[in-house]
Length: 254
Image (cartoon, rainbow, N blue to C red; front, side, top):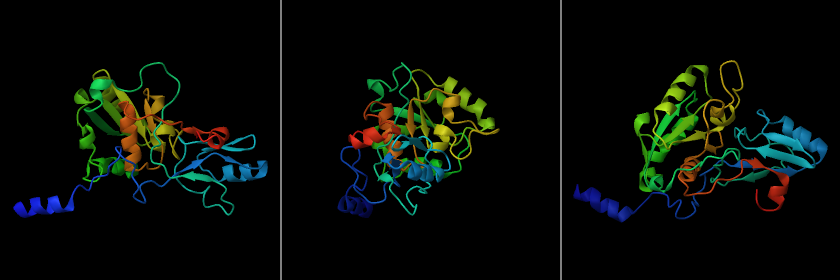
C-alpha cells in the first residue's frame, strides 16, 4: 500500500485542470463547423454535402445549426474546403425561447446529481458520458454525481434519438424527479434526431417530449463538451449560441 501512495505522490494529479484553466491537450474535441461567406453556387454545393441539413443557405453564404451537425466532416473534406472549423469544446448552448430560470440555483452549483437515460443511443454518446467518471475528467471534483434513481436526481441527461419505446419511460423518469430539475440533451440525436429523426419510430429530439434546458451538440460530443454542459446547467458557465451566423462570425461573436 505504501508503494502505491509514494507512486501517486510522485506522479502528481493527472486530472484535467478544466474549468480552472483551459485544456490544451490535443484531440480533446473533433471540432464543429462555423458559418462562412460563399458565392451562391458554392453555398448550394457545400450545403448539399450535409446529410442532416445543418448547413443552411442564406444570403452571401451559409449559416450552421449545430443541433443538426453529426460531425461527418463532409463539409471540411470537400475539394474546396472553405469551411470555418472550430475545435473549441465549450459548445453547450440553450434555446433562447422560454421564460423559466433555465439553470439550477446556487445550492446546486457544487452538488448536483445526474440521472442518465439512454433514449435510443448507438453507444457513442453514452460512452463519452461514461468518461466523465474516469480519473482524467473526474467530474466528482466539481460536485457532479451519478444516481440510478430519479427521486434523487437534479439533472436528467438524455442521450440518443428519442425512440417510440422510450417516450413513456423518459416521461415517467422526468415526472418522478423532484423540483427544481433541469434537462440536458447530449448529442445530435437527442437534440434533433440526427440522421434518424424525424421518422415513424424516432422523434426530432428530446425537446418533442420534455423542456430541454441545455443542449450539447456533436456526434458524439467529447467529454469536455458534456462537462461544459453540466457547468452551464448549474450556472457556473455561460451557454453559447447553437446557431452560427455569418455576421456573428465576422464580428467575432460566433
